[in-house]
Image (cartoon, rainbow, N blue to C red):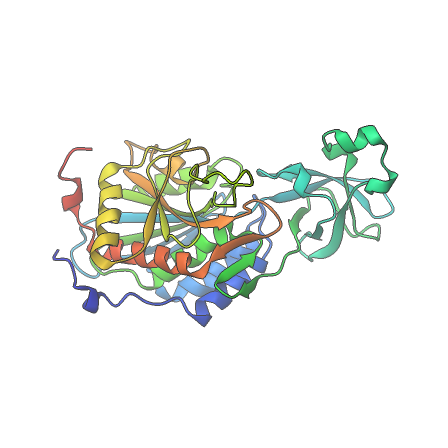
Length: 360
């Protein structure tokens, strides 16, 4: 197909409606294996636009918009619904509960954090011995999970197996978006808008996946079910752009806030298909959409599972950069979110089988 001119492509803007949706998604509690609150929000948003919609055995939301013209490609985009947090494992009586961590959380970030427990969002706090009651050797030792507990003040309200989320409410402050679970509610909100505005010439497959934070589990099942021609994971990636306190140039980074969508070249689980990387890069250049390359390093996204199903699926990841990932509050820029959506929107509208004519 011919590439649309920028003036006719008419890339939508993410406005107050989309920010309000992101707020609802961020405030919802959806720990790995218990993604129901976010799943309901997603279904309410996309159901009127879906030709096919189902929830699979693991809890993934799988939605399809069929091509309105001769289908050229089946394009799968994924975003994971789950967030990091905790699980209650033992009732210690009198309102105290032992817990385990779900996903990658630095234990040093945990003491004193308010939390929501279970489906009723029972308020609690993660307690630890205050510093002025600690012995000197305790202050120097590594904090142990067994020395922490959840205190909700009352007995009998909480049961083992209840998921526990950070009690952080979404806010917009100037150019910044703050909230819990913006990894990956930013991706979820982006995928919802892409699904609502999908191009006619492709079969657009959307997978809102479960259990990404504990092993990319939902994405493997979703990609196998869809059997796409290519797959794109939409996620959030850590911005490594904090000041260098030794006053040297902070050049060792993966992404930076304000520099646009982050296109992955490689991470610990995926070597991105170079033809897709080139397509996104050309899209950004042609339509003057700000982007950056997420430099190779650790971490991973749903792409790590999707590209390995069946006979192999060309794939890559595109992320919104953010600071303080996997803590009680992440910070991202609205402009980076808009640019990520715009880059993916334009890339989908201009994609064709021709990009796969050259060998990988």
